[in-house]
Amino acid sequence: MGITRKRLHYSSEYELEQWDKVIDLIHKVGLDNAEAALSEEGQEVKEGTTMKEERKDKMVLTHKGRQSITSLDQAIEFFEIDTENWDIVNWVANSWDVTSVKNGLQTNYQVKVWLKRKVANEADIKADILSSIEPIEIKANTSPAIHKTRKYAVELMVTDLHLGKVGFDPVTLSLNWSVDQCRQAYQDCINYTLSKLDLSEIDHFILPTGNDFYNINSDTNDTKAGTPQLTGQFFQQLFKIGRLMIQSCLEGLYPIAPVHAYFVPGNHDHDAVFGLGDSIDCKFEQIDDVHVYNRPILRQYHRWENEILIGYHHGHQIKQKNWMQTMMVDRPEDYAAVRQRFMRFGHYHKNQKKRILDYTIKDEEYGVEIEICPSLSPVDVWHYNNLFIGNNRRSKSFVYERGKGLVSEIYYNLR
Image 1 (cartoon, helix red, strand yellow):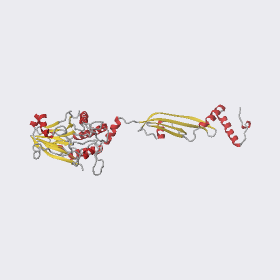
Image 2: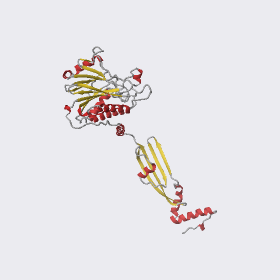
Image 3: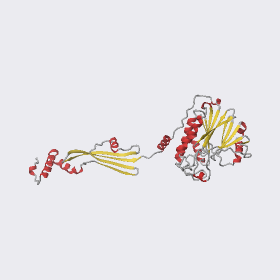
C-alpha cells in the first residue's frame, strides 16, 4: 500500500517539505527501516570529535567522525602517537551506517587507543650511558712484535680523580668537575702521554687505578669512613660510567702493548674500587694482554724483570716515616732482586717527594724512592674551607727503560 502526502495533514510549507522527505525515505528503505533510521538520526556524528584522557603514565585517545580509521597504523598516524615513549596496550575500531532524512545513508567511524608510558629498563640506561661516553681513540703501531725486546715500561699514574665530586672555581664560583669534564680530563691525559712516546718501543703499560677514582664509596653518598660528600650523580650510574672509562682506556692500550692494571683502594672509594676491579677482571678475563690485580688489601706491587719494583698505596693509613720499610717487609725477595725501587702514593693531591732521613737532603732510604703524586681534580667546598687550596691540577706518568731504570717523567697539566 503506497503512502502519499495527500493522506497527511500539514499546516505549513516547512512541514510539507519534512513530510515529503519522510515519505521518500519510507519508499526507499521500507516502513520498518525508516523508523529505525529516524530514531538513529540523533546519533549522527556531524563534525567529528577527538578526546584525550591522560593520567600519570596512562592515556586514552578517542575519535568519532567521518574519518575512516580501520587499522592500528592509521590510528597511530592520526593521533600522532610517539611509539618511542608510549606502549599500545589495546585498541578498537568500529563503524556504523546512519541514514538521515537530510543526508541519506552515511558511515560514522570510531577508534579508541589505550596507551601506557614506557619505563626505561636497565638495558636502555646502559645504552644511554654508552652513547654519552666517547671511546679513547689511539692511533697506534699495532704491528706484531716481540714485547721482551722493546725498551720501555710506561706507568700511567692518574690518581685522586674523584669521579662524581662537585668541584668549583673559587674565583668565578662556577662548577668545574662534572662527570663529563672528569671523563674528558682522564681521556686527554692518557692520549697526551701516549703522544709523547714511541709506541712501537713500549714493552708494557702499568695502570694503577683506584686511589680515590670515585668520590663516594656507595649509594649513601659518603666515603668509606662515612664522611658525607656532595655528589652530582647516583652512585649506580657513577659506578657504570667509571667502569666504562677504564674499559675504554684498556681497549685502547692493550693493542699497543700488554697492560698491568692495579686496583688500589682509597679512603673515599675502598669498596667501590674492589667492585670496579672485579668488573674489569670479568670483562678482560679472555684477553691475554690485560692483567688485572685486584686484591682486597691496601698495597700492590709491580715488578719488571730485574729492572724495577713499584709499590702502590693510597697513603691514608700508614705513617709517612714507615712508607719505605713496608716494601722490604712485603716483598723481600723482589726488593733484593731489582735495581730500582719506588713507592707511589696519592691522597694529598700534590706532587711531593718525601725526605725521610733528615727531611732536607735525601729523597730515598735503603734504595726506595718515595713520591706523592698530584691530582687532576679541583678544589671542593671541604678542601677550600680547610685551606687545602692552590695545588696544581696535573697528572704524572713515568717512563722506565730496560737496563737504565727511570728515565723520564711526563706531566699533563690542566689550566
